[in-house]
Amino acid sequence: MNYTALIDKYLDGRLPKGDGLQTEIFEAMRYAVLNGGKRVRPSLALEFCRVCGGAVETALPAACALECIHSYSLVHDDLPCMDDDDYRRGRPSTHKAYGEATALLAGDALLTIAFEMAAESQSLEAVSILAKAAGCMGMVGGQTLDLASEKKQIPLSLLQEIHAKKTGALLIAAAKLGVILAGGNQKQLEAARIYGQKTGRVFQIIDDILDVTGSFADLGKPIGSDQGLEKSTYVTHMGVDKAYALAEKLTQEAIEGLAVFGDNAAELKDFAEALLRRRK
Amino acid sequence: MNYTALIDKYLDGRLPKGDGLQTEIFEAMRYAVLNGGKRVRPSLALEFCRVCGGAVETALPAACALECIHSYSLVHDDLPCMDDDDYRRGRPSTHKAYGEATALLAGDALLTIAFEMAAESQSLEAVSILAKAAGCMGMVGGQTLDLASEKKQIPLSLLQEIHAKKTGALLIAAAKLGVILAGGNQKQLEAARIYGQKTGRVFQIIDDILDVTGSFADLGKPIGSDQGLEKSTYVTHMGVDKAYALAEKLTQEAIEGLAVFGDNAAELKDFAEALLRRRK
Image (cartoon, each protein chain N blue to C red):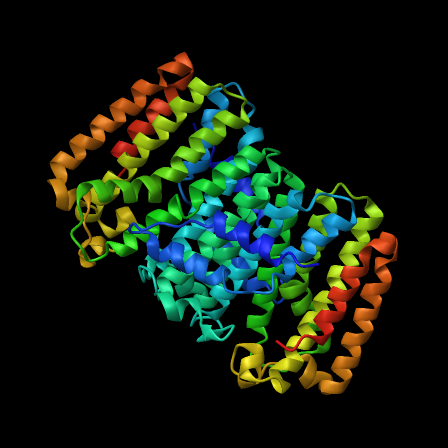
């Protein structure tokens, strides 16, 4: 499962370029997206499309829409009025590179172009899934809860809800979009949802762990930046070892759910295991 | 043409409510949208739908999507890193009422829910038109150009391009959406485009005029706030009288273009004239 080149090519071709007065925002949009990211969400969408017998290209625009939404959320998250992060993936965050106003607008433009891409998939259901996953009941809802919980000790159940919305919603949408755009059935759709949900939790647990054990070079942002804000994390709740054990258990469950796809899902198994093992 | 109650009812029912940890963002979203606005864009969409023989309800979700996009753009525009406006429509702007982070996220959530609504219209073309009009080649593009031109004297041609994108794109989209969702023909679509374009220019010219001649109570924001930033406006370019004459000429042209709709478009004529006469 290596769709990175395909995804990057589509995004590079689809994001605007220009040398007029709008160059700055076009460059900021490209800076935020074309950054050597791992393309977790779009890759998931493409692979679920493939395992359901669909042509990967069918899901490409909606898959890349997911990446634009993910990228915009990072741009806005890094702004001074939010997490105020100067670095992202080891280089200046978008507002440090282009200024706050341009970063704000570039984020808005990325969110908007995502729906242009989604419409290209010729599926209203895809548009709807994306909007719900990204909106105030999904990703933005998670960011709101996160904000409301900052500098507070929060119960594990709320921490889980935050992650389910902030990280899980887009991963679930990715998996579901792949199935839907391939014309998959309800069983496959439900398996995709569960896989997205479980791996989403793993993703966040590992993030929390890396934030205390990783290095700047590994993670691309200062170590302990979450702790600096006195955030509750999986690590503050259960310690590194138990958190990792939970991530292992969830990975196992995500993999078991792939049975519905038969022998076809080996790469989704590898992918879930890679998420567990990731070091940056 | 009085769709305000219909539009407000839909928006009130469609925007989320709740009393949990997310109350703040739900309230901020509602504060930004349910504010007694004139509903210019959605009303246009509904009326173009009606004059093309469509049922107004068909266009209601997409029409209200336009209002959510318009509202989000005002919320983000008012933020300190943009225009830094403390007032909007005579009351504190969203970030003054709810804080910057919540205002940022509420704007993001309104832009996102707009596409959920657009998808409800069951038209991929509607989704696509909205995304293009709102994005970096449309409204956000206009905001970018505006930003790049701040505190500069700019030529009239650039001023017009800024307005065409910042204000015109959404009005054109409104008119076109109405025609498309009614199943109108190409001639009607082109007439709608021209009407949206011309009235969009009128809208902006009158805005510029009101900014120097209006009162706080009329306009809902401090008088001369554009001048404070040494912005080029239609008034700085041609003075109040010539600017008003241009607005009158454009209104006339917009009305002439309505001929294709026969006797059915009397309210669109009135609407164009009301835009010209508006005092707040």
